[in-house]
Image: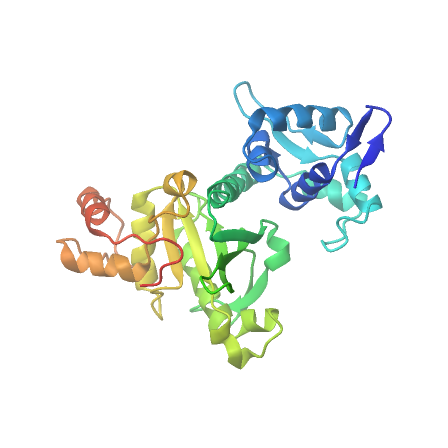
Length: 323
């Protein structure tokens, strides 16, 4: 499909529509994200195409400081084009006013969403090199996969959880079949407390065990074991990763294997590598070292020795491993 634009004398191509749809869903992207997701990491080709599409008025750029990357978002004209071509009918319907409001968010929110897109781009770049695994879905619009779950310790009250991302990856089996790996993504905001992270993990556990995710997949609640998923939490550094692992172990009930933890640096370098740890792996590592888990109610003190010991001894896994 190609739609001519007489003003700029170029044809809007299928790939253009694909990234405009992606930009509508994600709200913001940089040129590097677009190159990774839609141009096979060919940055110069992406840059030239974006210049034409920007000249056509289909995308706009947020104000930025010198030396900051250009942050792109879908313009009102781009939104109108996608609506006219019926290309976003399966996404939430937004009026022009609602569309404008969604684009007008704080810089803190934008920074967080750009980090989520960094993770998404890293996954796409890594999986392009794989003959076995492929991404079938990587959604970063929380509204599309939000759910209600009971938060531990709050008398059974339900809360609304909005994941940073939802990922489905297919794996080609040797016999020609296909298996699916399903993940929810949480990219840590350093301003969040450990309690916030642990409470969210508890909500994911409830969503799984209560059969909420099974129902989302049009099955009965009793069939919840047939719809497993993992929660990927990407943290700022190893210290915060280890602190989160400790708190997940102290949860009631403990969260041992549902959550996979890694650092942002490791994920951006190779999200498919052996970079992930589970709380149960952290627990086993503590048994082998002189470090001990800190009680949840004790004042936090940095444990530099712990970080060194854990990093040397902990068993890290790839996403496809389970034990």
